[in-house]
Image (tube, rainbow, N blue to C red):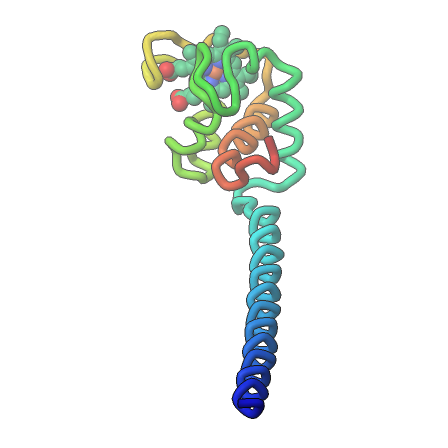
Amino acid sequence: MKLKILIIGTLCIVFTAITCHTFAQVKKTSTTKKAAASVAKTTAIPAFATVQEIEDGKGLIAKSDCLACHNTEKKLVGPAYIAVAEKYPQNQNTVNTLSQKIISGGSGVWGAVPMAPHPTITLADANKMIKYILTLKNTPGSLK
Ligand code: HEC
């Protein structure tokens, strides 16, 4: 009888040791994965834009009248910037086309309401604004 208790006791200790070890191991891998994910988040910058251009674009949008008609996530008078980012391929061609629309105005893509032209915005600034808008797709939350 005593021997039985001893054996069960030993088994319990061994079992606890194994589960603890496995648990620690699982914890370890999950923290490594988390670290990798956060690196991926901060490095998800597309080839056509630099972090500096994206930051500048965000600032230029805040300083201009854009936010009177646009929101990052919600449709106002104009489409949500995330919706714009999801609609177009992320390349220089899109940057050129959409920059031209900021400067000359646009209509008929998102509804009946046209976007007023912005003739005083330079092409270089419009490029940065579009680069910022397009990256809202890759970096949800981090650059908003
Ligand atoms: C008076 C309201 C208004 C302002 C101000 C405004 N927009 Fe718009 N924007 C719109 C509307 C409306 C549309 C949809 C036009 C369409 O359907 O083609 C639009 C569309 C867009 C698009 C998508 C164009 C396309 O063809 O898909 C981008 C990008 C954009 N705006 C960026 C900007 C930026 C950057 C600014 C600030 C410099 C700005 N907008 C200021 C109303 C506005």
